[in-house]
Length: 193
Image (cartoon, rainbow, N blue to C red; front, top):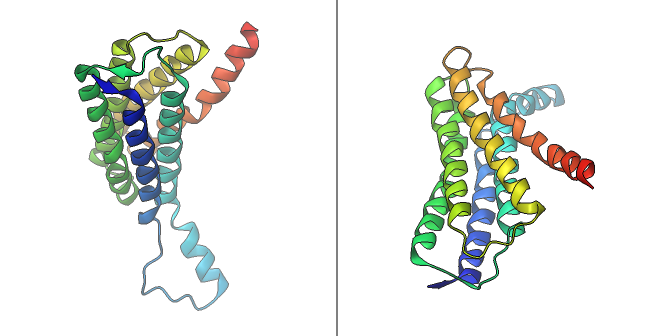
């Protein structure tokens, strides 16, 4: 048995590092010396292909982190089987900065989309498995919200992979559906209560 608080502490740290690492690839070349403000503005706007995956990844990670802290269990301990799934989940989370860099550098290449969307789909699948293994889960509105957000992440990831086979340059927009998940959750709560 493992104290859940220790897993939570490790998770907080890894999410913080992963979310920070995302932004490191968004930069102007060191040798870039703009001659005027127009050139600087153009160079900043040219960073959009890297900024878009960063933004999606930041929100996907943020939503994953929020969903892990909202779901609670009655016990303070988890078994070794659950802890191993948690480590796999954290491994996938730490891969998000790398896959974001790849898709940010090669946004029009289907294999870059496959790598990124495959990673996010695995995050969703492993998270769902972890939910099934949670001991003494407290069934609240947060559990339903987490299930919805995991479903949206998995479906949008698969959709991105499918779209990339034909239109790789727009495939990442499928993952933007995750940005709507908080609105959907809010709407469902408002409708229910």
